[in-house]
Length: 162
Image (cartoon, rainbow, N blue to C red; front, side, top):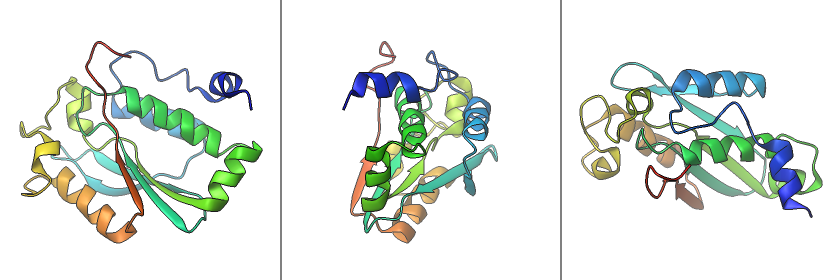
């Protein structure tokens, strides 16, 4: 399989640079004809989306942009989503074996102003136990309802990477 060629085919070119606000993610999702469900709301009442793809027995939860200034994984997720929605044999196989639940942007308020923390100044990664923030509670509720076999908290290394 020519993975480099697949990358170029399914790369979402509209998602580029470091600054990826929720409105841009919504436009790309609309272009891919994705049915993203609003499953929660951020501090500033921005929608928190959930997308499910695949019918397999193995459940995989992936979430991105828990830190608003870590957009690389959001871009990668949308490339992956575009691939999964394709007619590629490998994509079809993945969708038969796995049920993916994807939260493309857990911190849309932080993404809007390109900061690590949410609108209340809380690092959501550090709020996983206390659950003081609506975004943290959203993530926990999705986790408990979906009951994944695998869970991936996708992060950037540092903001110098794109």
